[in-house]
Amino acid sequence: MKFVDEFRDAELGRAVATQIMSLVEPGRHYKLMEVCGGHTHSIYKYGIDDLLPANVELVHGPGCPVCVIPMGRVDDGIAVAHEEGVIFTCFGDMMRVPGSDGSLLDAKAAGADIRMVYSPLDALRIAKQNPDRDVVFFAIGFETTAPSTALTLKRARAEGVRNFSVMCSHVTIVPPLRALLESPDLRLDGFIGPGHVSTVVGARPFEFIPADYGKPVVIAGFEPLDILQAIEMILKQLADGKCEVENQYKRVVPYEGNLRALEVMAEVFELRPHFEWRGLGFISHSGLKLSERYADLDAEVRFSVPGVRVADPKACQCGEVLKGVIKPWECKVFGTACTPERPIGTCMVSSEGACAAYYNFGRFAREREVV
Amino acid sequence: MTRADTCGSEHCITCGDDGVAMHVVRVDEARGLALCEHEDGARETVETALVDPVAPGDVLLVHAGTALTRLEPVA
Image (cartoon, rainbow over all chains, first blue to last red; front, side, top):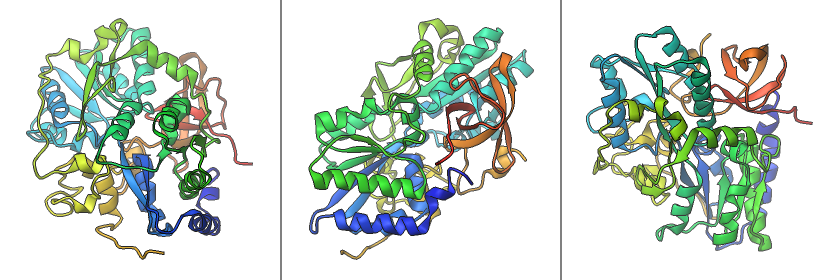
């Protein structure tokens, strides 16, 4: 397939891996964080870490939209789904995320009308087909899915659909990165920047990482060669004593992002003062809510949302996994009490979650030889 | 074929918030929508406001039913 096969060439992959070998300083340990869950998935699907020297460690960041949703937010969604006359819609992965008393899938089994959709546009279609019901879309995700929600809200307004509303749990990528960089228990050497988030926000929002924290960032695509080349570019910057934002994914990501998407997001959303992230706690200005102009389409205004805060289960170490402090297989319940079929923690739910990626691709534990 | 058919336990192209390349089959200019097709044959109505104008044959990067950018052929 065009755009894909070129970036899965094994010969080229080996050549880049050799180049990476030549860039690492013996005796130095490199910790690079891939911010995006899509990268985590590709790394384990293609065994990219097996091509790296043992002293180059990949740490999985907080960029999986499902993994960062706290239990309390799931409980809030379930409460709205149980309201009289509501059809509650969400992405498929979200249905399996455990709340304090079961998941949305459990609530559906108990009788709530909860439906999986592939896009907010699908949810709007359901609203138009069911004018006597209240259709709520549970919006999650970073700046990749937020424009989609924003455009659907504008469309609902333009088409006069009044039985549609959004429970907004969108988050933004920069505040958690800043929180991680401020975290005392994590030392990172560089970042593989998120590819598709950058399609929307551009590369500029990541400039604070080299400027304020002295770490290189390379925005990368999702094919194996993209990721390998991004690692090579980070190591090259470190070897040359440079520190800047580079764009490996130029074929998709413009440096300025998508200005139309940023405009529509600015119109429809505003920043919440605080938003709770699973494992990371409350982070200032990291979540989006609907702006005053769209308050009539805000499910949190239309329905009573409990807004309770629920502590993560004691056995679950998703927070440490999301901060890259432990590897998924080091969690006490990994692969035993917590599996993709019966997840305890969110990182085991989505295919982009670090735990699910390790589990699905047989990465239960690994030792690599030091070169 | 629907998208649901393509969602295995390993990966789901949309539920996992993953961008997917789709080519434009038909354009509804008045409504700002396009019928797009994935490589596996799955079809979806896609919001094109962020990349307009689009034409049949264009390849778009689609996230959650919205085209975020146009994909250019690799030289």
